[in-house]
Image (cartoon, rainbow, N blue to C red; front, side, top):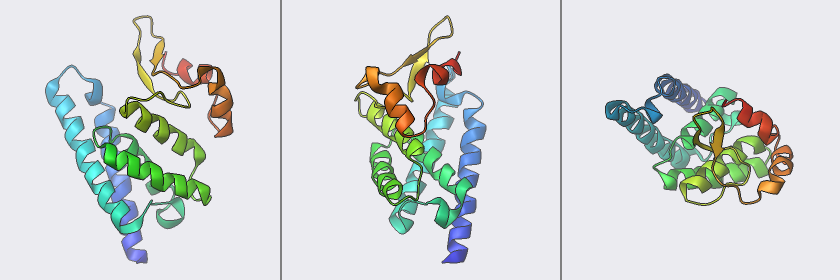
Length: 169
């Protein structure tokens, strides 16, 4: 089992590295359909594999696979945008892990917002940006309680909304 978890950790971190390589090319938002397709294929393949991992191991927590691999699993779930079943399942398992003290509430907040936006719902924490205006200012997806966003963000260890969106400018 220990050897299996070590191999799983390596696999997850390799998947996240591949994700990063493709994401940094801008493929996800590219005007080039071939680049977009490459991104979609990669995230679908990774989402499928994460589903298999969740079947076999549950949520891959840092205690089981190490910090880097746990973070990689979260990233893969974040990017499984066209696989809502995978995102919803990851969200449920992460909720359990956070309740048990085995995962970060901050990461759960990002995944919750991402899943809600993909479901067509308003986000909670204001973590998801829909686009950027010509002047460089970000356009966040709608929030359920915009007047409480900073309070909710603080509760899970996320910086204030204005500081967060300033990074997108």
